Image (cartoon, rainbow, N blue to C red; front, side, top):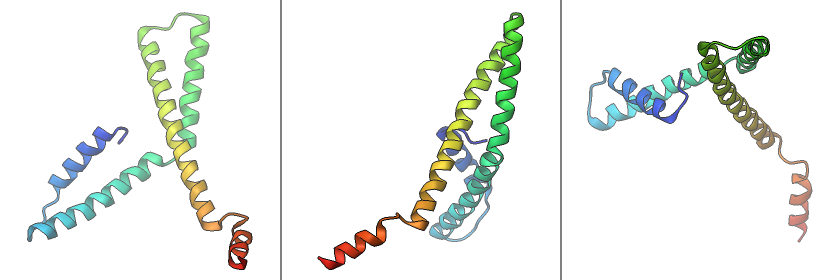
Length: 126
């Protein structure tokens, strides 16, 4: 999964090296960009798929570890897992929030503002 910008840079470098394209430099570069874009879209779709379910699973596991921690001390591996789950929860929540914001923005751009016709009508009259 591509979680950080450094991961994206490494991913792009690896993908760019993996394509075998012949021709003059501009053509090769253009084709590599097209292919890398396609691979990035694939990777993003896999990363953004089932966010709600993944969030639920992380929360359930955290709840289980919290309950166990209330009854007895957690072993070091469980403490590390709880810390990792907390980071994953934060990361997934940011992805979900970003996706919701983008969907809302696209919806607003598509449907427009409720006052748009009124404002345009007023500006035409003046």
